[in-house]
Image (cartoon, rainbow, N blue to C red; front, side):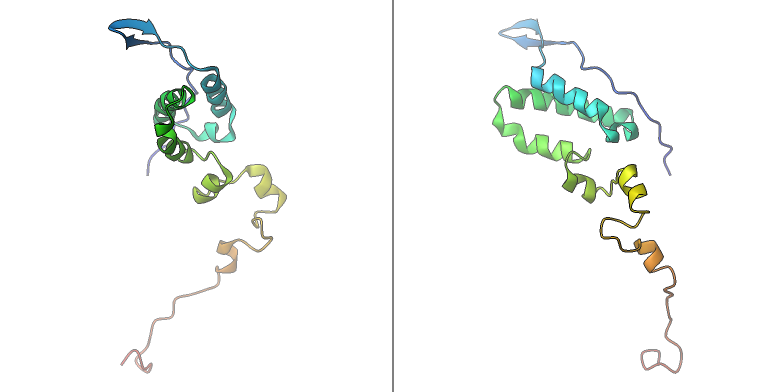
Length: 136
């Protein structure tokens, strides 16, 4: 089992890129800066480790290129943000739940039914015996 270590969100870095044979300062699109701040403030962020932030930082570069018009990156951007629980569907697939919602329904889930653990707690495995047809 791995030990979880929370990591603080880094700021978007300053760096240079090569353009026409010269190094120029990379300028983050305003939309990517807003997007990054949204992720830093998201409830999911309290569960991000250093590797999660590093992956999301690489994703920010894809986001920047996308917002500069490179639509070929849309699918990769969507796959990457899904790994961090960007949409309701992503969070459901990742089995993420907001604490307030879980507390509000007493841990029963959105259907109001008892949790699976509770519903199936009394079930036991029955092994076939000698007298059973399947057992011989």
